[in-house]
Length: 141
Length: 152
Image 1: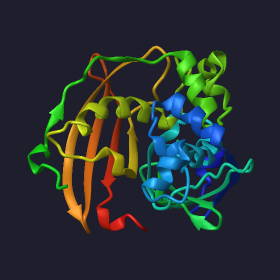
Image 2: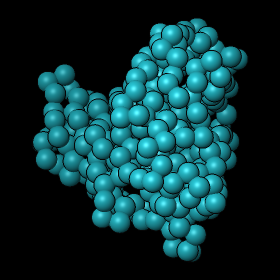
Image 3: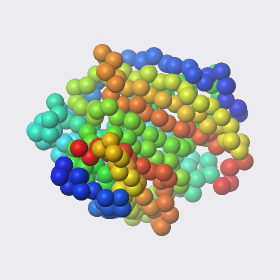
């Protein structure tokens, strides 16, 4: 996003959406890269033992995927000032060769006089939102 | 099991610094399916004014997870880690993390409360350079699900 286009930004502007597919192998890769080896992200036996429907994705992986809608549009990751989410529903990742599909949309929900704006992100899986209060604060200039 | 409320306000000094490497950034960016050149290509990052590869925004969680591990697993705190789920996460950035950074994380327990049989603990991680320059602050809410939620 160029500085010029940011100056004309309006509340309600929708950022380009993205869709991600998450399979078990992606969870293993994220576990290794992040150091989060919690067994509920790779072991179906233990996941179901503790009351989960199946293995679930790391919340931080979902947060990272959802955030790409904002950072791809920004171009410069340094323009991201704050990013926060609530994990409201787990992303269940069955071992079926298909995995889970996460659809992410985002729109500008506030423009501040200080030259910043709030972007609200929506992430859904199987038609249900998986993140709540997912908001980024970005620098416009 | 109720958490020990005496832990609120406790702060844990850095347990050794973290040196951010290029390959770790590339590995993390690949793991989050992010092909943006600024996370993979040093020249692309330099052309945007950065000293080296930039780490994706949620990379800060790698540092805070490492730093908070010994805090939340402290047996005196009383958190049953096998029942813990991540409730909320927030990052407040001073600047992006870049390859070559050597960073410290100070972890502080901000709140402890019990709601509907679930123990909830919020921790803050202040990530700074060795000189004390603030880089990013992480806020995490962990929820230890009570036994009543077992079937939900």
